[in-house]
Length: 267
Ligand code: LHQ
Image 1 (tube, rainbow, N blue to C red):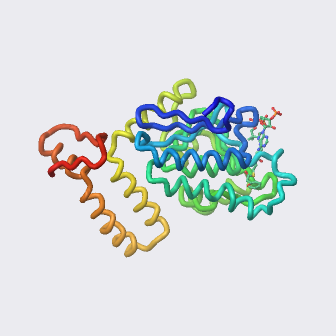
Image 2: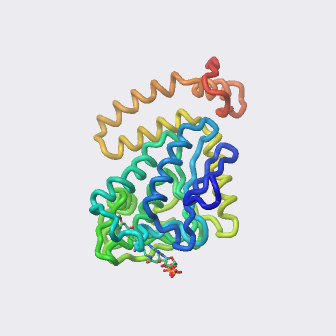
């Protein structure tokens, strides 16, 4: 991938970092950026060298939402546009069988705020901020914001953030549960990489199934969640990772979950 690409991709120590690369526009999204990001996520999913994916932004922005200079005359309705670009991307993130980290390095606005919320884990730089900015241009929150935000902050707080397009700074975001950790701007990339490597050392199959179980449970009943857990636990228990975890416990050593797939260990 060249440095000119709208998405930069780099894999190091099991961590694939996908960087939105339209810094002059605070990484505002055009169709090329959205479709390329979704394609790069799928590539990372298929690559056995990748255990964790990080989405971040180049420059001082994370993503300023739809590129407002790029919407006129594109010959699609809003509904068609969302269904062709944003919605498949958000679905890809949430169903990817590897953990996805939203590493929010700067402002996340509009659909960029949705992208910031869509990650399995949200890490923010101290200067990052999130704005559900849609109502400033008299639009409805999209790209998953209406699903993610009330689940994190409750209905009324979500409505207020959307209706007033209030800026949420990093300290407030941490208190509200919009992010899991805030790191300093200076060391943000290194801190994100170190966090992602911790995740990359965890049992990949178990995390894949955990992601599936949690996402299913968010929309289902307790009965459905219990049935799903029982089914997915079978898949986890039959995997070599489980044998390694139990063996490591008995041998009083740290488990090694990063090894050639298919290697069978005795539990
Ligand atoms: C931008 C943008 C931008 C183009 C900054 N576009 N250039 C909508 C429609 C259709 C279908 C699908 O769904 C959606 C969903 C949405 O995402 S709607 C929301 C669209 N986004 C916005 O309304 C955000 C617009 N941007 C802003 O309000 C500000 O730029 C924020 C608050 C994000 C950041 O403010 P500042 O830190 O003061 O930066 P800035 O405004 O000076 O922006 C820097 C440059 O980036 C500037 O360009 P310039 O050439 O003047 O330096 C901006 O024009 C450009 N830029 N956002 N979305």
